[in-house]
Length: 433
Ligand SMILES: NC(=O)c1ccc[n+]([C@@H]2O[C@H](COP(=O)([O-])OP(=O)(O)OC[C@H]3O[C@@H](n4cnc5c(N)ncnc54)[C@H](O)[C@@H]3O)[C@@H](O)[C@H]2O)c1
Image 1: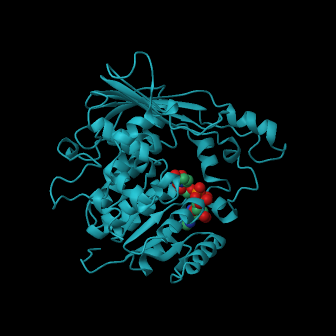
Image 2 (image 1 turned 90 degrees about the vertical axis):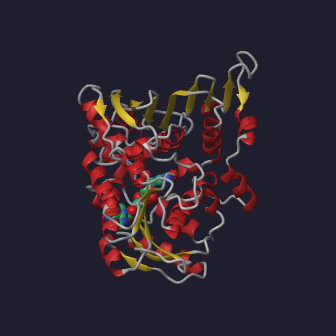
Image 3 (image 1 turned 135 degrees about the horizontal axis):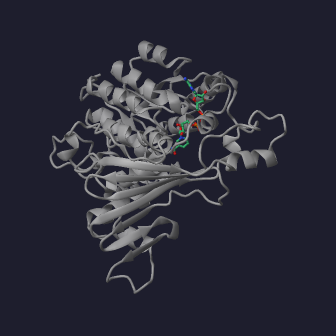
């Protein structure tokens, strides 16, 4: 829906107000230019909890719905934040676009490449635009690294690595006592939605936390693009082994034939010659939660797990340097301003920034920082890796969701070149409230 300059307040709906959706709604309650107009969830207790939180903050009670389409039809929303279980994200985003409402989708896999194309088609036919709420792209360190890449600190980028490495064996085995309740389970065949995907699919199920921040460094869809990938799955043993040791004999997760390999390794080739390794690792023991970021260029490298940088002919020979020393020097202007105005909670402050990106893009009616082409390309890693694994790690071509636009589009997350640029300005993210 076209907005006018007088429209000061953005009216948002929220579909899926579980752990994540409710958290994002709480972040929005700190924004004076956002009203939570409506919330939708299949579980009443989730609706009640969010409504109570909204009114506790002295805001008007949101209208509540059990059905996303019904909410879109009944309300005059500017945007809708979608944080349901994964398989509903893209269909719901398409419905929003068809209703002229901007969808902000939380992260997860696409179910199929066709679904990604349908999302792109719906966005191109709509006055509204779509944003992936990939908070990982807004983290302080990630934006400093982007700045280092832009300043040529690492020379020409040749190879990058990332992943989603987090021991989720308990959650994926669907141990009772988690916060997921019956009506949501019915939508996933009676099971926690992430667990059922691990039982039925063999692919990288959570690519965007790793791929997103590095795609910005490589200018994917803006002068570069993903060309093809190969993906390889190890055997699947971790979830069954954990279940045998921790679950009662009659637990529904005991004896499942898990298809999802414990370690999925995907290698993406880019049009400009770089390679990106993406690791999905959630069903074996590990003590930490890591994205395993690494950037390798002709002049240096960054390795997140060691929190270290090495710069050719600058760092002492054979010695890592502290990343923090470089981060301060290459602080992104957005984070300079954010630290002055006060960093707000949620993934180190990134949740607030990603939501501001969404809200400001709606207000200014310009392309959001992570647009529909990024959403399609990053989430398509899942079905493409599924196809490659099914074919014995054969290379699979990436569709060009931009239809050639990638060759001339401007880099993401850089200041717009002109005032009439059709991209959201980062300077406006903290000023707009
Ligand atoms: N960006 C991040 O850092 C981050 C962190 C955690 C979770 N997530 C993502 O957020 C999403 C939600 O995860 P969660 O942990 O909050 O799960 P959750 O199970 O706590 O919440 C999902 C909610 O969606 C509701 N729901 C499911 N299907 C629905 C439908 N068809 N219509 C209406 N409501 C529906 C459920 O009832 C539930 O309340 C997932 O995509 C997850 O990957 C992102």
